[in-house]
Length: 338
Ligand SMILES: Nc1ncnc2c1ncn2[C@@H]1O[C@H](COP(=O)(O)OP(=O)(O)OP(=O)(O)O)[C@@H](O)[C@H]1O
Image (cartoon, rainbow, N blue to C red; front, side, top):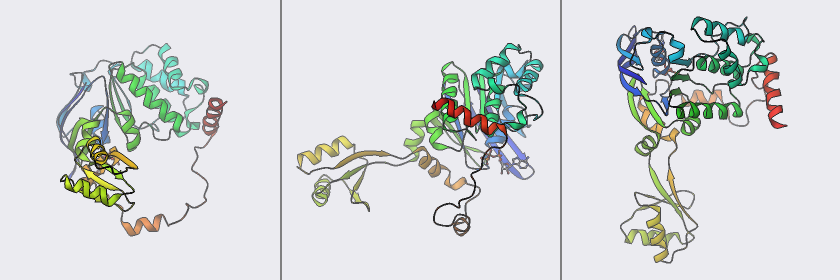
């Protein structure tokens, strides 16, 4: 597990991480969320001893990072996939890491196979597309077969197939009993991957809870009802002391009463229902609700309009990864499709 105790980081006057105390447990995927500038990357860097805390400690399976004999065999991390020597091949990049950490050479082939890079293992990494770079970074994280894994924005640059792959990889790693700690700005992806969430805002802990509890506690749940006899339905509910709020699209919203009870009431009152649906806010809504006050940079309404005018997006060329890496990605997709 990873234990943070009063972890704090100052950059001059700026408090990037502020007395963070929490434990990241094994056997589950723990998501790490926070608005831009909340201190996620700084926290992850301190976990890996790449930055010194101003105060507080980080322990990996009970030890400080510097006390780990071969760190890669205890903790693996994907922080910045671009931080690779471009002149080296994927194979040599991993081999250097293996040799300096006492990891057998055979493991290099294994992890290349796991991330699907075997066919390009001898190519120089400077030709790699964004998605291939991410896969290579993940291979490096897995190299020492560590019990603890950190992934900072792991789905960055991956196509839908790659995103699906990393989601299942993280779940499998957790199911093997490992500690998996992952940050992402993609809320829909986080909702599908993480079992537990640690949320920070302006460096401070805001939530340390299960995904289900986080959504329940930070969002509104209600039941949506639609009826061709809306007035009768409202009167019926009113008679039972229930307030139904009419929303623009002709439906009613009811807070705090289970859908089953509302359905039974409508049946007893012989009111026809066209819709009776319990609604729960998404992770994104719950996250925005919780962190609204701690967002460092807000978009200015006028500026946003200026940047993105109404109508279809301009017909410029899509941003594509350059070099033969792009071809490799396209071929891989084609192979999958055929
Ligand atoms: N080397 C540094 N020198 C000065 N300030 C820094 C440095 N690194 C980070 N900061 C500041 O510390 C705060 C936390 O930054 P950090 O990159 O950890 O946030 P983050 O949650 O990872 O953000 P994002 O989601 O945008 O990646 C920010 O206000 C940032 O400007």
